Structure formats: C-alpha cells, structure tokens
Image 1 (tube, helix red, strand yellow):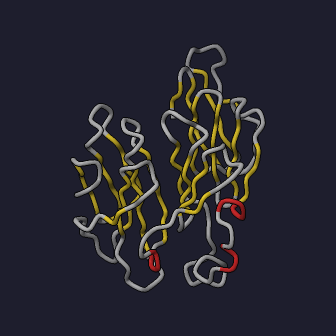
Image 2 (cartoon, helix red, strand yellow):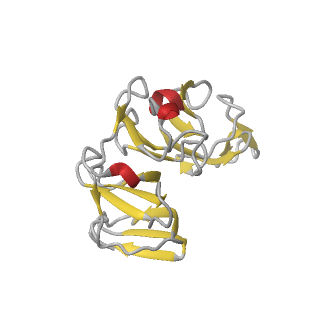
Amino acid sequence: SIHENHLYAASHQGLYQYNLDGTTGKWEKLPFTDDAITDFSVCGDTLIAINSKTLFFSTDGGETAKNISIDVIAPGWRDNPYYNGGSSLGEIKLSGLAVHPHNAQKFFVAYRGLSYTEDGGDSWTVVDIPDNSNILFEGVYCNPLDSDNMIAYTNEGMTANSMAKVFVSTDGGANWEYTKGYVGNSITIFYNLAFHPTDKNRIMMCGAGIYAKSEDQGKSW
C-alpha cells in the first residue's frame, strides 16, 4: 500500500514502511507490533491492522497501538459451535478489514461474521444479516468513491458443498442483501476485490475458478 510518500508492506513480523522520498533508502519496521499482519489500512496518522486474533489501532503512525482482541470484536464466538475450535471448519479468525474512506474511526471486520465500530474500536456492533444460518464471511470492502457502497463475500458455509456468496450494502453497511444474480459453485474461492479508480459503479473480483465484473456497485455480476 502507498500512502503519501511511504510504501507499506505486511509481513509475519509486523508492518514495514519505506520512505519514497529517498531520505532513508531502507525498510523500517513500525514498532507497534512484532506479530504477523494479514491486512491493514493507513489513513493519515491512523493505522489499522489485523492478524488472526487481534486488531491494532494506532493514531501515531504505528509507533504505538491499542490491541483489540477477537473476543471484543466477535463477542460470544467461543460458544458458537460453528466458530470455535471444535468446528470442522477450524477456529474463527479475523480475515478482512474495511475502513470508511473519510472516517478512520469507522471500520468493519470480517471473521465469518461481520462487526463494525464507529469509535476506533472502543465499542462494537455485530451486523445482523438476514438468513445468516449458513454464512461465513471472509472478506469485506468499502468503495473508496462511495462510502455507502460496501461488498462482502463468503467462500464456504456451515454445510457441505455451499456456494460462495456475494453481499452488497448501499447504506454504509447498515443493511446487506445477497446478490442473487451472482452464480458460483462449490469450488469457487474468492481471493480479492478491486474498485475502479474513477468509476464508483465498476468492481472487479477474482479468485480460484472465478473472475467477475459488476457495473452497478455489486448489485449484479
């Protein structure tokens, strides 16, 4: 990720930055954690990063961070038979991060479920998805050109041979709708999603066995 004059890269030992103005000429590790980082977002001096069990929220450019555990983000997950280590799907983990493009205090986290915060992680709300009995979210994204438009996807369900699913929100994540026009199968696996840099309506999605395009903000593919 590039932000202002720095290049950022996640690693198994933390988050690194490289000064693009040439003053240092080397990678430097941000001191907020030595743990693995799987996803992150930089918004000015605010840095938000996740690994499988912890979210890091820094307001000083990564010098320090408050650590927010998965138990706070997904309350009750240990008691959910589909989320805990006794599940055939394995133990729950934080898997996706979506930050509001104009408000770094508001962001969503995917962990098979979805939760969001509007105060930098001090309090959390679990998203109520209609008919969520077979939903295990892995990715969530916020459209940088339209903060009301969000996309989330699942790669597996709580039952065998479940199809990957795509969900869309047009009100900033308050409500979500299953995109019934998308056709997947039991071996489809989503890896990533990208928004067009100048057209808020166009979205591309790729993965194993799938390459899909939407021209209406994810309502159809």
